[in-house]
Length: 80
Image 1 (cartoon, rainbow, N blue to C red):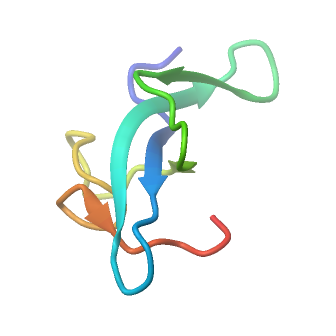
Image 2: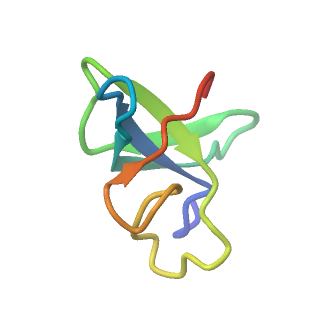
């Protein structure tokens, strides 16, 4: 397994109409070592929200932040 993950895992909690969703990074995913698929490591599990896997941003050298903003909030994506 490579050090740098292929995908980051976020728990996304929708807060309702006209409010931004809360994105919390909870893990990462790497290509599976023995074929198709991914190995996912989670530090938490979203019980009442969504789990979203996203590719790291090109300018994200540290792996910090969210795909939507520099804070823990971002726009909710429909159908993600």
